[in-house]
Amino acid sequence: MTDTTAPNLSSDADEAPVLTHSWADRRALRNGMFTIGAWLVALIAAVPLVSVLYMLIVQGGSRLSTDLFTELPPAGFEMGGGFGNAIVGTVLMVVIATVIAVPIGVMAAAYLAELGPDSQLGRVSRFLAKVLTGFPSILAGVFVYAVLVLAMGTYSAIAGGVALSILMLPTVVLTRTQMIWKVVFPTALPGILTGVMLGVARVAGESAPLLFTALFSNYWISNLREPTASLSILIYNFSSMPFDNQIELAWAASLVLVLIVLVFNILSRLFGRAKY
Amino acid sequence: MSNSSFAIAASPDAVTHPPAPFEYFVDRFFRALAWAAAGLIIVLVAYILWKIGRQAMPAIQKYHFNFLISSQYNVQELKFGILPGIWGTLYSSLLALLIGGFFGLTVAIFLTQNFLPPRLAFVFRLIIDMLAAIPSVVFGLWGIFVVIPVIRPAANWLNEYFGFIPFFSTSLSGPGLLPAAIVLAIMVLPTVAAISQDALNSVPYRTKEAAYGMGATHWEVILKVMIPTAAGGIFSAMVLGFGRALGETMALAMLIGNANQVSLSLFAPAETLAALLASHFPEAGPAEVEVLMYAALVLLAITLVVNVAGIGLLTITQRQISGKA
Image (cartoon, rainbow over all chains, first blue to last red; front, side, top):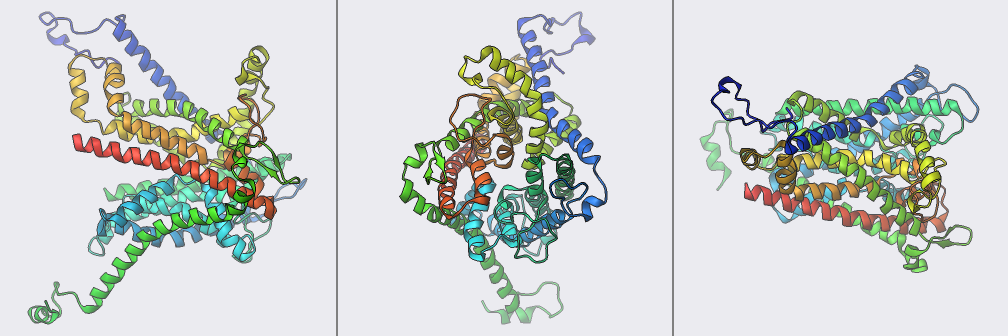
């Protein structure tokens, strides 16, 4: 594998000139060293993921129980507890984001793919959708704060969901969607679902846009117009607490959150493969 | 043409039939809807710019450009400056790009240039994609409990013996620039790797074969043919990776220490614009919210310039390559 330039002519080696490099040849040596270097770099690049998954399984897994899904977050020195309300909050806000972003995203994708791919409008809006993918998520929070939180006078699940929908929109728009109306709509469906799943995976783990739109709550949600808990903000809040119980819960919440994100990621791959 | 002439030709229960008025209406309706949705993206971006700009206006009038070059951030005295935030944002992102860009590009080469059998390469690509899927807060948590303890002894050793070098002039007591930049590098890596892979894959196969045919070694082909040919795409990968690093929030808010100071030291706590927003916004009073809106506008302007440059470059190089091939 390392020496692709050396044709192997062993079958009639007596006649043929020697075309292989000696491994000690300067060029071959350099080639070998670079290859070893690349392997090292690639292996090092895999270390963080392995380490993160290890910590999640060891630290988060040890705390895994049904209490996590049914109890409320503990205060101060309290032991036990869970983050049932945060799971509900995360799911609820992702659903709100999906309901807003998917119809708009699919329609815009249809325009970009079929109706006016090369029109002025198509070009500008495709460019801006790409720009939006690199849009810092916290600015979505700032924007929704200015538009919704100030107007409603309270942090709310609605504001959190809207902030997430802004981040979801470009993913849905830009994932390759083939839309030729109802004639081949069924063939386009996997493409659309891929985009939706990727969008959900992207926003489910977001926390920056929720910081000052949904805020956090230690209680079960009773309506959409009040501050709402989410897994990601719970991790953020608990990570800086001096109590072991909260730190353990932050790890357990991270495990649950990563599982949710990965499930949607895998789903998007499955839908994506079904299509091609 | 009138529908009635078709209607005579087609029997009512035939598979093919001319569009009924209702179907014309549905078609128009959907076309209009799609047009509106595409337009909505443009309106949204414009509205975001206008809204944040307008909210920042009072602070801009109060603090002018002095805001960008002052290091004071004092809510009681109403003196505000975000120089440390701007400095920290650029410094941490550059460091992250240096580390993450090197690793990302190497991984891209590793995955596209026949180092691994296709099935293993697929698995490795999956690992890198998973890295991109891990939420920012989880990286932050991991950074606090893994990265900081791991690098602290080495950092403090460097500070003790090489403290005269400005980069090592303080000790690492906990959160600081280096742990933040390392985690940021990990988050930049998948972006750089993905776009660089596309760039390397789009180099025509014949170019590569010609180089091998001339007797070049594996790495001579990579360094002297593949990378120069894909340079445009790789460069835009770096720019977009930089853009991603600039706006990254949660991991930085958890790891950088939120200290309002400008320092060259890698181990000193620092501040970034996004982390400033994350840590101050939830508890800010009206006077501070104006200021934070100004900071948000600055962050928006920086990331917008970098991203537009990156996407523009990518579009141009893609067009060039497809045009040549």
